[in-house]
Length: 281
Image: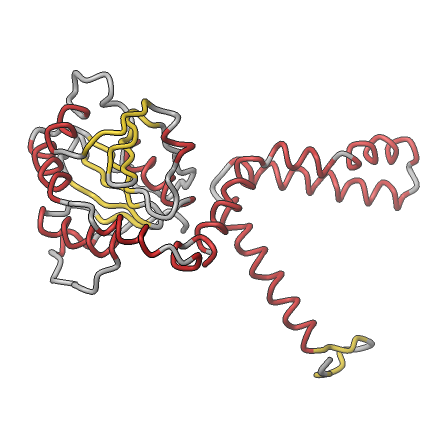
């Protein structure tokens, strides 16, 4: 291995530098994942117990060392149980960003063509009508993942997409209006679905539970989420934990085309539509 320099009695090689950089990146990602959540306090508590165990063992306190040693013996299993949601989010995040997750890697071009046939007009017209009546809505556009886990948390529909059906689902008197609608395979797959709510404390207070649920799902999947605010009637899109608020119908069509189909068309977006809120601050 390539030798770089000597630091005291340590010989630093190129592999050592790469190792340190990778550990730094890993710790930074772990910090971003845990920050702002209760899991960070639990992690610090476990770390404190471990440091106490090292001090007690070094001091030769046998009885306390045995007690803490038994606790540390099941530490890995306990950590997996305690941090199960965070571990799941971390693995979902890796799965979302890896190239193995994309259809092009596996050579299934017909699946890409299916997604491109999705008509955006029913969603844009429904969002405009719902916003005009201050009726809340939460619509999830599945991309690489079918979101089967989240779809099963609600009522499976498997219906043809139409403006009137979307309006009926989100009608305030409908039993299906509370929750999200999931769009997958050019069909309305399910309604009244429960989405994970973001734990980020930096989200503005002006964003309600719908926005927080949309951000939470976009943190762990590559889905695009359409939100209609019940309080303000504003239309927003969420992708990769970024919130694009106060969209007009034209802005909404442009953003949906850009996010769902990766189109290069980028007409001017109104200044009010450029507001962002990054959940992973």
